[in-house]
Amino acid sequence: MQIDIKCPACNTDSSFFVAKNVFQGPFKCWKCKSFFTIKVKNSEILLCEPLSQEDFDKQKAEKEARRKKAREKAG
Image 1 (cartoon, one colour):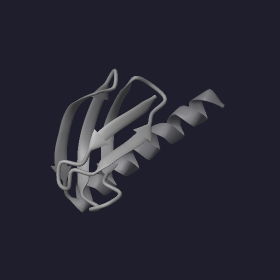
Image 2: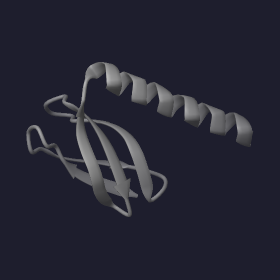
Image 3: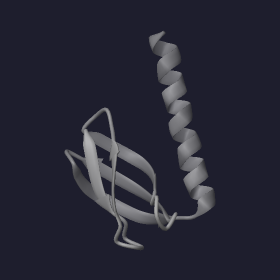
Image 4: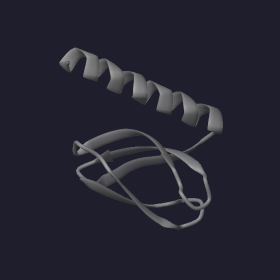
């Protein structure tokens, strides 16, 4: 599913793809490089808050750890 988002910092249109209709995690604007945490449900953005670089890296690492654990469980 494609999620369309407008960067709150620079108003640049962006999009990304998710496998499910629910997503919560980090987002980085491709243009201004600002970091945000977002929550999306059924293509609707429910939350978009600024993040520090440190918090962005932490959220990204947590997301990757969950993904790795799910792959190990499935395989």
